Every structure is written in C-alpha cells, then in structure tokens.
Length: 228
Image 1 (spheres, rainbow, N blue to C red):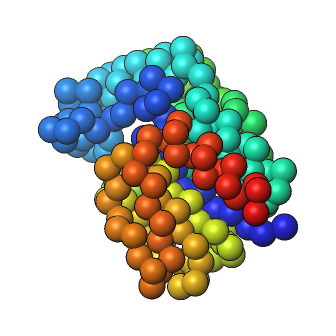
Image 2: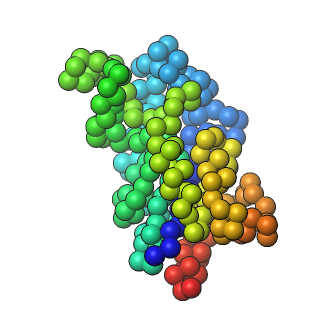
C-alpha cells in the first residue's frame, strides 16, 4: 500500500466548531501568546494558564468530528495513512483514524511538572494544587512556545516515506511543523487544502492547491484518490 501523510492544522477543527487559538489580531482568546502558551507565562500566572486550557478542554468535549475527519478515515481502506497534526484536540481519533501524531501535545492529557514528565489522560479541569503521585503540580500536555517538540523526529521520518502528502487547514507559518514539507521527495504529489492557501500551484514540486474548506475539499480529494 502507498503511504499517504496528512498534515493538519486548526482549519480542519474549526469546522467542527472549535475556536482556533490564534485570532487575526495575534491574540489567543484575548490573551497574548506569551501569557498562556509559554513556560514563562505558566511560571508567572499558573492559574490563568490552567483556566485558559480548562476552557479549551471543556469546549472540545462538546464538539464532534466533521466530514473532513471522517473522509481521512476512509483513506485507510486503500492507503497506509499517517496523520501528523498541529491540533491538540482528539477529533482525528474520535473519527476513527488509526495513526495520529500530535506535534503540539494533547488537550485531553496532562503531565507532571517534574523532570519525569509523567503523561496521563485528563478530561477534567486542572487547578493549582492538583499534583502527580510525587507531589508535583500537573499541567496540560501542551508543547508551549520555546519548548522542544518531542515527536518531531518521528514526524520527519514518516514524512520522508510519503508517496503523497496532503496538507489541510494550516497557515504553514508555525515551525517546525511547517518545515515538514521540505522532507518529502521532490516528485511527491502534494495537495494543499485551505480556503486561503499559503502555497501556490507548482508543477515543479507537484503541488495542487484546493482553495476550499476542509469539509468540502477533503472528501472530494479522498474520493478521487480512492478511485485511482
């Protein structure tokens, strides 16, 4: 089976009703990114940061996978599919996708602030005073700005083996995730699905731009790939 690698961003989850973190003015739900998405922000005001992610977690539990998520599951009948997502929600998994890597962490998991970084499932609010078994405060399992991306090497290895790359709903401005496109072979077909695409069609790199929302563009592309 051929390998399809799918890189997804906030655009695919937004169509399930999830608010995207970053607004047009660069703020995340009215907060400067340095306040709520950095280790320094957590150190300065842990209660603010914990509540910010508590709100995101609560919202996630009220939404459902959309037709784009479901279409990617159908691809697994004909292809070996790996999804590399910048999203911290679990909508790909809930839709039924088998192989998902979360570059930026997972909202429904928490981890200890001690050096072991014990990671565990967490669907409830996290408040100051919630500790791991060793007595350390716990925090959302989110990769904040300034922190290493633990699964990046795995993502690169998977992308290097791609026979087809599909990019959905991402600005291609957040690194290192945006750099993954550089690890596919020059002749690998690339499909870019976004209503405001940040990439242009290119014969040289075999890039096909589909300027549509994910719920429209993904099912159409999947149907064409399955029919091949």
